Image 1 (spheres, rainbow, N blue to C red):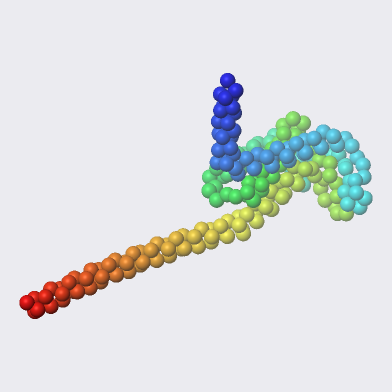
Image 2: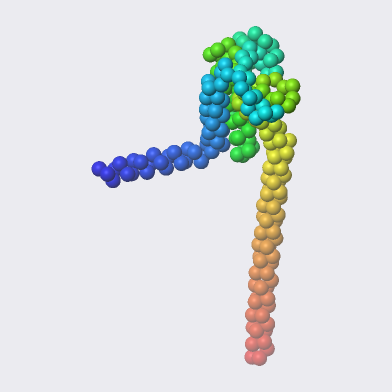
Length: 220
C-alpha cells in the first residue's frame, strides 16, 4: 500500500516538474503576479482612509480614491476604463501566446504589467475607483499605489526587452546558425578529403600490384 502511495506521489511530482519546466515562463509570470497582487491589495486594505508621514521629505501615506485612469485622466468614467482595461489585458495575453522569443526577463516584465493592470481593474469593478496611497513629498506627482509601480516597471522592462534583448537573442541565433553551417561545410570537406585519400590509396595499391605483376612477368 505504502509502495503504491509512494509511486503515486512520485508520478504526481514528476508531472508537476514537467509542467513547470515546459511552462517555466508562464510560471514565473504567475508567481510575480501573485506577489504583486498580494502586497497591492493588502496595503490598499490596510492604508485605505489613512494619512501619515512616511520618510520625511521622501514620501507620505495619503489615501485617496481615483475615479479616473493614470494621472487621474478621464475622472468619473469608470465603465469606460473597465472596458479599456479588460481589452488591454486580453490583448496582452493574446500577444504573450503569439510571441515566440521569451526569457525570464520577459516573464518578470509581463508579470509586473499584467498583475498591476488586474489589481487596478479589481478596484474599479469592486469599488468604482482605484485606491491610491503613496504620495511623493519631494515632487509634485500624482498619488499612486503598488499596482501603478508594477505597471510602470513592467512597461520599462518590456521596452528594454524589445529594444535591446530580442535583437541580441536574434544575433546569437544567427551566429549559432552560421557556426552550425560552418561545421557542416567543414565536415563535408573533411569527408571529401578522406574519400580522395581512399581513392588515391586504392590507386597506389593497384599501381604497386600492377608493378609487382609486371616484374614477376619479366622475371619469368
